[in-house]
Image (tube, rainbow, N blue to C red; front, side, top):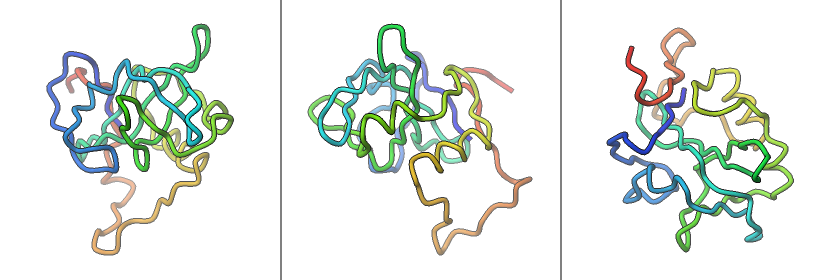
Amino acid sequence: MCTFVSFTEQLRPLGGTVQTDIDPRSLIGRKAFDRNGAKIGTVDEVYLDDATGVPEWAAVRTGLFSRDAFVPLEPSEFVDNGLRVPYERALIKDAPDFGVGRHLSPEQELQLYHHYGLDLSTPPDTPAPSSGDRSFGRVAGQED
C-alpha cells in the first residue's frame, strides 16, 4: 500500500496530520521524537499510499547499528524541524521489522496498524474497497 520516497522523487505532499506544505522528502534526515520528546532516531525513508500519494509511514533509524522502525505519519506532527510521533519510544522500537527500501505488503501494513492501535475503519462517505481493488504500494522510482 505504500511507496518509498527517495531524495530524487518529485512528489506533491497530500493530506494527513503531517503538515501538507512539507514535501515528504524533507522529512528524510530529520530527527524523530516520541510523545515525551525523547529522540527515537532519524527518518530514513517516507512511504506514500499508492492510490492517494498521501504520506503514511516513516522508517526511522533507531541507532547506528539498529534497524529502522516504521512509524505512522498520521497522527504524527512536524514540529521544530523534527517529527513528533505520539507514541512511547518502547512501542516504536518494538514495531514489526520488515526492512526498508521496498514494498510493504498488505499484511505488513496491517500488522503496523494493529501494533499502533490505529483505526482501520473506512470514513463513512468512502466505500470500502474489495481486496481485489486495492493497490498496496511499491518502492518509489520502480516503474511497472
